[in-house]
Image (cartoon, rainbow, N blue to C red; front, side, top):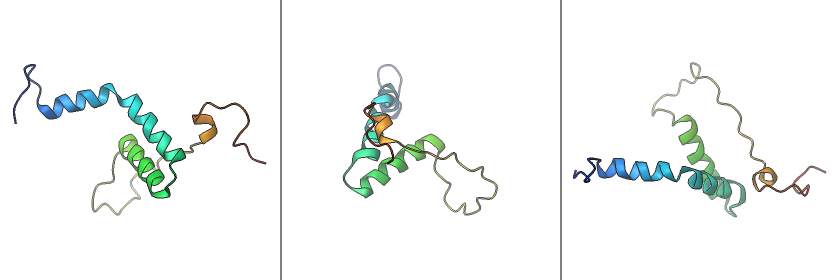
Amino acid sequence: MSAHSDGASPQHALEAQLRAHRDVVVAALLELACHASSEATRLAALREMLDRGWGRVAPGSADTTSVAAAPTLVIAPALLSGGTDGAGQGA
């Protein structure tokens, strides 16, 4: 593995770039989770967000009794889009 002139490995340099743009990445994932036409795409975006927010479950750890329940995530598309026109409110 070669090092950059600042001593950072290519992996660390990439991670630093991604961290610098995390707000854009989160916004893109939220957009996909709320508005993608494919259910598979919406679920994949949600899975990515949860994996990064709470971490992935370790392989082979079927025992969930010792794991605290994750908080419920409710995504309200009307709130995410910043709309205040009442769209998306229940009848």
